[in-house]
Length: 112
Length: 204
Image (tube, rainbow over all chains, first blue to last red; front, side, top):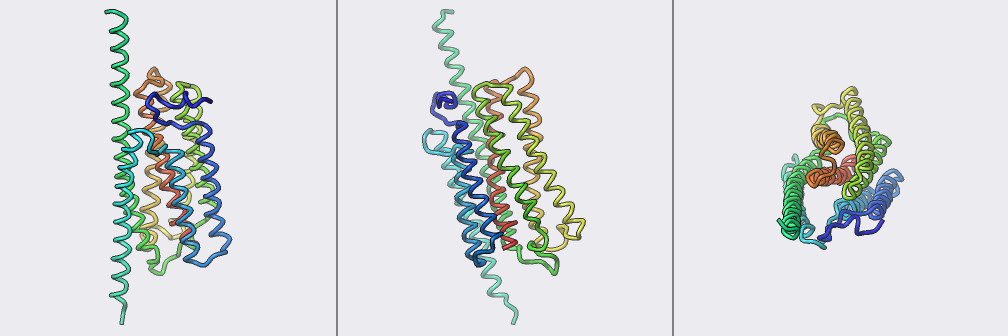
């Protein structure tokens, strides 16, 4: 399985069996870790949530790199990355704003 | 027409095709980014309503983690089988593309079947989307993901027969297969957030 077969003339990566298998193994490890963290009940509530958040973030990055071939090598990859970063920022604003407003409302609308 | 000009025009055509292919794929990527915002919003809604049980059942009482484990395994496997279809598409290996697409399709159908079964059981136990704000947001978020997977399966079904037909693995078909691969892998990413924050987050 030479790299040439799976790489187009502009160096745009389509992945190889190797890269998919590496991504898959990493994803399986991270998924099992997530389930084990919760099912083992070894950590306190917020610790568990924090561990889940870290594992999920790492797994999203693994999927982006190994399955969606995100990177900085070719122009099209960089364009995709730029669009993605802007989207992540927008989603972060939505979620953080939502939680902030919610928390604020809860604090101000406490009965009594 | 001499050989050289023919050759040059073929090369020019190929370059034009390649450029068009990249534009199409980038356009599809932009669509996926807007989808990302939809899911981000639905996750925010779920985060804000996930403790509003209205006296109804909680996620801890309802969710069958065994089922979620199986669903996660199926979707993860389908990601790699689609990946293998992609590799073979670029090698113009038609038979292998069809086999991997078929496997991915079967895995996708099993996922949707398990999800429908889960939804059916929840509704049958009186835990439908009308029971509480928590369940409304749960059904909206997970249902939207399931709907995407279903649409992906219909798309895959169509592409399967197009690849089998006389179009084979033309540049145009390869572009279509690449777009579906982005869609399919994207849905797996959304599922990571679903099983981590919706299911596991609810049973902590």
